[in-house]
Structures are given as C-alpha cells and as structure tokens.
View 1 (cartoon, rainbow, N blue to C red):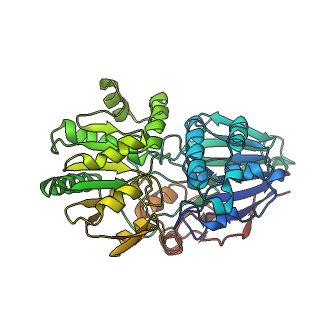
View 2: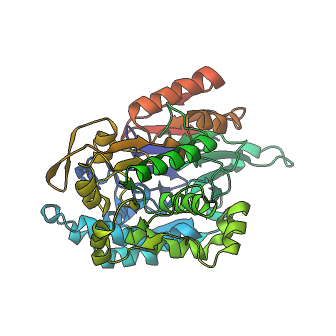
View 3: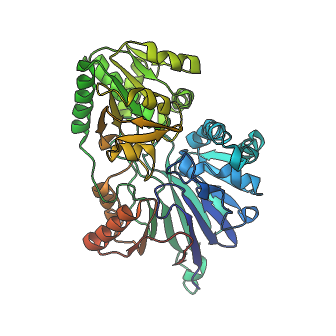
Length: 468
C-alpha cells in the first residue's frame, strides 16, 4: 500500500522571501521554515495574517538556515501556541538568538501593529528552549518510517537542505529478502553560489524523488569569480580617485563576512589603496563571534587563511563600529572611505542613514552586492530612480550606482540547472519556489526543456500529494 505525503505551500511562492512549507505524513504535521515576507519593508503586512494552519498542531519545525526570511516568524508561531520541536544545524541554532533579537528590535518600533506583543523576549526564549542543533548528515528519527537529515547547502554558515526519507514497509510484503521502498523528498532552502570563499560547495544529490527548490536567480547568471573581484577592485579604485564614500548595503549574516574576507585579501596583497573601512553593523559584529566558534564548517582554503590571523576578520584600515555614537562619527572621517552596513535591501538598519547622507553626492558610490526584493528601496535605486524615500524623507540619488551579482549567496540559473541535473534520473517532480514569478517560471521551463522532467511553480496556499 502506497503512503501519501501532502505538502502545502504556505509561503515562499511568488516571492523570494517568506519560506513556509507544511508536510503531513504518518500523522505528523511538519513545517520547513517559518520566515518573514520582505519587500518594501523589513516585514510586509502579510506576515501578521493568521497562519493557514493551527500552530498548536505542528509537531516539528525544521529550519534550513538563519536568514530572517526563513526563521523570522517563529516568535509569531510561538505566540499562537506552537510548542513542538525546532531542529536545524548547530550554527543555525547559535545564530537564532542574535537574528531574532535584532528582528524584534526593528519590528517593535512599529507601534501600530503592536508587534512588541509578538516579538517578546519571552517568545524568543521559548523558541530557543525548543531548539536543537544537529551536525550535517546526523539522522533525526521522526517516526519508525520517517528519517530526516541535513545536507550542506553552501549558502551561509550552517545552511542546510532538509532531506526527508520515507520508508514504505508494505512495499516489500510478500518478499522476505526485499527491503522497504524508500522515497526521498528534498527541500533545498537557499542553494549557495559555489564555489564560495568561505564555505564548502553545495553537496551533490543524485537519488531524490521529489525536489522543492529555490529560484532566486532562476532567470539569470552571475559574473565569474575573477570578474567580480576585478569589478570590486575597479569600483573601490574609482571611488578612491573621486575621493568619495563607497557605501555597501549588505546582509549581516554571511555577505558581510564574505565581503570582509575579500577585502582582507585585496588589502594584504596591496590590490587596493589603504583607506578607512567601517563595518557599521552591530549584528554582523555579533554574528562574527558565531563564525569563530564554527571555523571547522569553513572550506579548506578559508581555514588555512584564518589559521594565520589572530582575528577572524582584521586588516589595516578596518574599524568595527558597535555603538551608535561611533556610527555617527563616520560622517566626520575624511574621504575616501568605505562603509559596510545592514540591511542588504536598504529596508532598515544603519545603511539607511548613510544612504540619506551620501546618495545625493555624485562623488560617492552605492555598491549593491545581493538580491534586492521588488519594491524595496535597494531595488528602486538599482532600477534607476532619481529620488527614493528613506526613513520618511525623499532623497535625491546622484551617486554612482554599481551592482555586482557575483557576490550573491545564491546559485544562478545555470547553477540551479546543474544541481537538478545530478539527480534527474530519479526525479518524479520538481516544485520551484522562493523566486519572483518571472524567475520561477523561467526555471520551470528551463528544467522542462533541458531535462525533460516534471516541474511546476505552485501558488501560495495550494497543496500537492506525493506518492511514496
């Protein structure tokens, strides 16, 4: 007798953000990710709508990685009665507290939505009390016929693909030597832009039956590693010659650390002029402590490089500004200089103050290195608006705007195709999620045309039955 697994796409469809998927199997209700939907704001209003399921009935939440679009709604889940288990890799477990506290600090300022009642320290404390970290490939036995493990996604430190292995003992009835049939369902989370300067490559998978995969860059490719480094050098040098300020909005988790690692190499090899470089992100500074704890999760080259340095990220000209008073003093430092600050899509954080100050000057440069959500200030600037609204003010954009997609933490279109190609012989269905509609549909068609497999981009709230 065949088992059936029901998957409901509760979030993460039609959008890059808001990952939230419900699996129902063997009488268990299991979530994969519970993230914030982000666009114009740090958290769009849709986040506060009721969940499409009863949080009290959820048994386990598996978290793929620590970005807030994958874990940011956990306090809401707790607030509405969830008391099941939360499982992730060990680094993700350690990242959870600073990421949720930072999100709480930002969202609690929205007095109209009363989010301070959801994002309480008590709800965050309860979340962590339910949370358990695992190593890659360690088996989590959910039921006698359901095992789960984490594979390395290569996206950020501790990022994982979640592999569900469903055994069907009934399939071997009548044959004493036959083994139970096993069906493998893989949620990719976000797939890394391998090879990375810091992390091992995304693990290859070759025997998956059902795949739920991201599609952030499903319709476009990145520059090569050499091109992006050269482009970064040229951008820094051009800004230096103009005696301007180079501001870089970046995500506090991983992109900041990877960019620092790149700048470290450029400075130490005398590829760029020495100038003040400010890491103006208290969250990034705090998260770096977790990076130090899990150095063994880095790739060989990164581990070797770090073994020579007393500090994880430290080189001539680098200043970490933890306090707000220190951040305000950056404006008094003569140009040229570089300022790295969150958030990556310019929806909040310290970067918005720097953008308000530096965007009107044509001698300055804004460098975009990551995905910019539709409607976000970063996306509007990237698309060429001449005026952008920041912290309630209209800011004129006269500075140079530069985009380098090679620093994205996501696989590009060809990388996604190659990932699926490794397991095409066993695949029954691919569900393309976590992408803008254009990117998702482009990837769907690409998978159909190139690999001849079933691929679809499900709509929010729809369900699919998987035969196991």
